[in-house]
Image 1 (cartoon, helix red, strand yellow):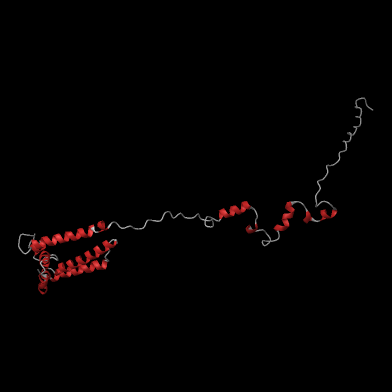
Image 2: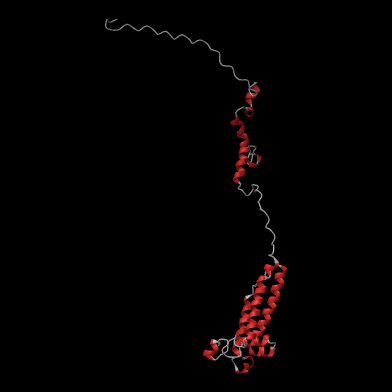
Length: 234
């Protein structure tokens, strides 16, 4: 052996063995109690392995929303379905309106009796002041500037004759005015009766009626200015 060669290293001794420790005891389980339970995969306690066969059984065997027993999911479905399926709170109708109570009889008769008194005063004045005498009333502007009779020409003379009981002279002066007197009398009776009963008067004539009255008035105005309608002229 050369003097320059280092001496061989002594052999390493193996580490001392670790002290022996018993393995931890296994928890007792019903599925692991014997050799037969370890052979069947269906009895495994793993929840994932037990849920796999149930999920592969098809849509008929899968538990639907109706069979879910989770109260939280049921509440979520009820909220998702919308307010239409929720029980609506009872509607508060409030107090019933009070029945219609007509005003006192004196107040109800105030308007019709006032209108009747005004018409009676006008007829009384025309009956006292003769319109056949010039200067008592102004002349119709249409008659003054055109020589044509308007539908109201002769109305004052008709009212004067009517007050004095001369119906023929009233019709000869203005037949439409006499028809207006009759219509006014009928309306006043109707108004007074409804006022006594406590029923309000509502006037709502149809457009056809208004057009008919306007047409008759226009025809009367034209005919009384024609030679054939001289009987209708005042």
